[in-house]
Image (tube, rainbow, N blue to C red):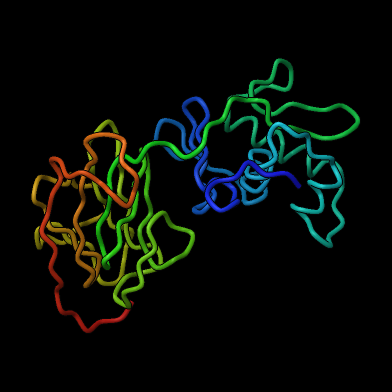
Length: 237
């Protein structure tokens, strides 16, 4: 199968088309930073079509990928395609994104780019993690935007929202809490201010905002700066 690849021949982790952003790693589709909820099969189909664009995938290829070793009726695929089209505001006739190849299968027909520019950088555990416009899930799970290894961090610990230069953080009912400047966060998002100290459990972090279009390994600091420290906690998530 042909691929539209990122570094080292891997498929691009984040693909942007029009106002949509698809994050393959976290299996998240957003429109202008707001999540568009999709079933696992619809997300997998979108990832396949984006990876193989502009090549059309046959129905057999799609069946094998979405339902391996399982028999399903043909209406299942039509239902998944329709679900994806609804999330994209697409239509079968005059489609902007999902093209039907009659008698064969489907193809992605929109104009998609590679990874969007980095909106901010989260510094934690001696690593620099790029943040993009929209939602960025932080936790121990490998499906999130930022994966942390500290044992006090929950699998889905918090979400960092970046919208039009503003950065906010919301706790996701983590066991050991998310803190900004020592204040425990609740379920409502809180804006990150200049010099704010962020802690996910016992993992201390800071956020910087690139002034230009940096690479994740060389961010330039701007208004969101913080010193890092570590709070000793013995609890385990």
